[in-house]
Amino acid sequence: MEYLWKDRKRFLGMPLSFTRYALSEDRLFLSVGFFSIKDEEILLYRIRDINTSRSLWQRLFGVGTMNIQSSDKTHPTLELKSVKDPMRVKETLHDLVEEMKAKRRMRFGEIMGRLSPVGYKR
Image 1 (cartoon, rainbow, N blue to C red):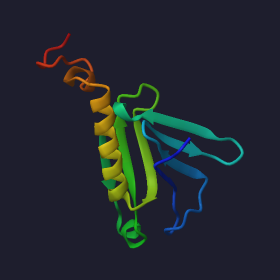
Image 2: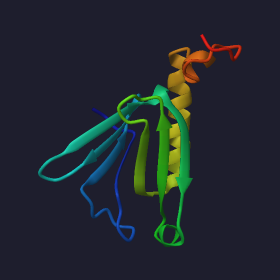
Image 3: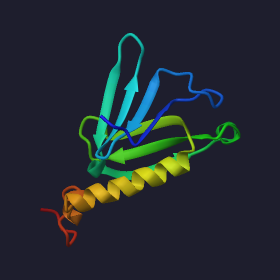
Image 4: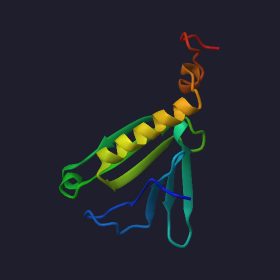
């Protein structure tokens, strides 16, 4: 599989971790562990919101944390800690999410869950 972006959780700006992140055209991946590995993935069209935060120490080392809210049942919140250049990654992810939603012709009701396009519950 070809990834558009890959990184690791960073410590003091260096990728010294067994937490790995990757982004493909249609999915976001999180892999944690060395001996026992736990993998999570979110389909991009299910992502609802992307937030970033950068503490003073993170800003000094050029990293930040991304919080991703999704409609995924098993993992509705995904946190990507200490990624390099988080604002650039956020914009790349946002563009891909919008592209995937357009390809799947997502309706307002599908994005908002149980609400129909006019805002009434089904």
